[in-house]
Picture 1 (spheres, rainbow, N blue to C red):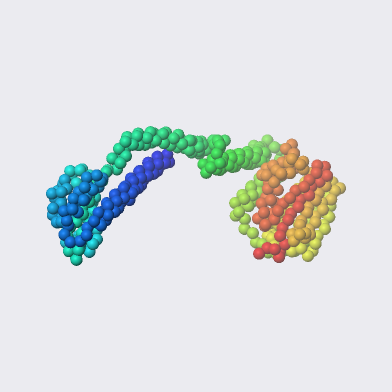
Picture 2: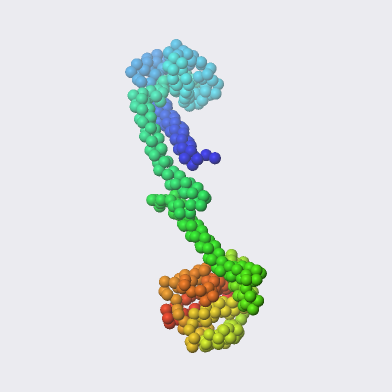
Length: 464
């Protein structure tokens, strides 16, 4: 496959060749139109003026003499003859009479029409243009005026300037070649940088970037490449962090299961203590199961493989069902629910996924709230949208962490135990489920005062 620089050079050379051909054609056209045509018109004009001296009848010696005298000082050669065959004795080159005045030409002359011809003459080594003007009376050709003029060649017209013209063209080509060489190198430089950067990127160097100093198409391409490289690098970091987090999350329960399982099998743990250790193994296995289920759920929602069965739901009833499910845990934590619900609110959603959203959010509120506090759950319609608010009076979230709490495995308090802090996937799953049902998630919080999770969904009438 040809390089783009080779294609550019071929294009430039082809353009030059086409330009030369066009200039050559234009030069010949101008030569014919301006010089040859002008010479022919001048000869016809001179011939017509001389023909006015013919008074009819036979061509007299006086007319021939007058034409000869004019021929002595004119730049156009002109002869008056009674018989066209006598031209061979007048002009300094051979004339084929039958070629000069054939049957068709003789008929034109008898009609009084002028004949113009052009041909190469060896004696002059150039083209010769000739004009035959008839002297006619009573439809009888009494004689002719023959005018001829050797045409100068194009090179002769510019004989003094040809060498200078060729030299100037040669110098111009050298200068243009140098300018084109530098220009193509300058244009190709960012493309070469892009090529090298792409090779580095393909080998795993996601930090590679291309300098962008222009705003043309190549500059925009380089900027797009940098954005792509940045996105790939960011995604690679996310994948690495994801794998680290998963392995970190699984390491502890696996170590518990492996360690206590081996201890039980080896008889290291007494029989009366085995029941407690087996409960711990079951608990850690349940944690691993929950983590893998959450990862699978998150993967499906991110890849948009989540199958939703949306239909109209009475929102207040759904929230009450979830609150009833969580009541036992709330009582154990000495936290009470305060429900302020509009029973007329209808939402089109997947009931199972909607309950999953509420369970995750209420679990978070219970986990981070102090005893003897309340969790307020509200739903209402505002500005043609369904608004759901879950407000707790817990420890709150620092302002700098709010934008990151929906990221996978993100924890506000890194020192909290996994038993207390969860897997860090709950809000990521909630956000994906909310988006999948055309909703929005918003979090506002203040440290030591509490957090408000606001969900916004379109009302049933607004969904097509």
